[in-house]
Length: 329
Image (cartoon, rainbow, N blue to C red):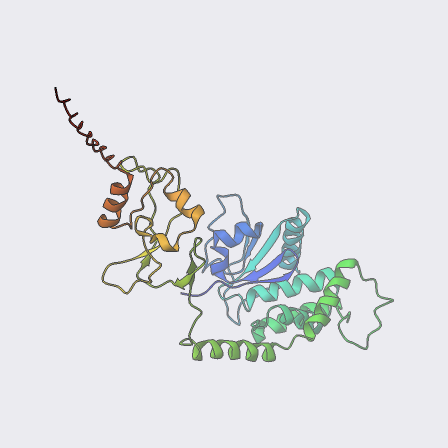
């Protein structure tokens, strides 16, 4: 399938192939409301019912095809159609099957009639915008005859020509500057630079890339993110044990049977020795123990929290009274 070809010759005027005339996205984005179909026997007018204005010619790419009749009826009709679309601030597309010969001949005739340019000036200007343009020799001969009939010989693109005395409007000055700026663009050199970039990227596709890393907000420690690392969404409430309340930031954990980082754990399994005091208070506000405490530690804490029995005071032995000696009679 052929690719879309659409080239802007000047503001509001495009040349393209038949694919461009059938691409609704291209037509909509560029506000194309007028289309000149130079290959009506090969390409249909798809959007005529949608309000797009068409001017169709059943021309074939053949030496027997006459694009420009001696009475110039076709050129006059083309000129009025293009000007009507441009006056509305909309765009005009001139297309043929391949977008390189018939449609380019039509646009060349329009520019020659509008600005009075010579044929060489017109073709030189167009090829800077459309390097793939390839007008057939039999159509070029018709353009030469058209320029000769109307004595179109004005040359504004030659560097040695003094254009200060020529009646050039603002649009022609813009096109003249555009032409000279395009001459400074070396297409071959830029194409070589693009190929070099592509070759460099293709040869370095296996170069080591910068690994993604994750940082833990409580310890500021980092670790690599691998294919086995998955995000875990925390629970917002824990009514059973009352360990945490409100939303908690998701903490990454690794899948089973992998080699986890010692700090990559679920928040229910965070070692207490790596938590700051603020993190402990946030995660366990109503509990004096943490999930990492062992049963022996918990039982030891529970044993310490239970009240110890007070020892009962021992009764002191009472001294026995000494018997008093009885007096002798």
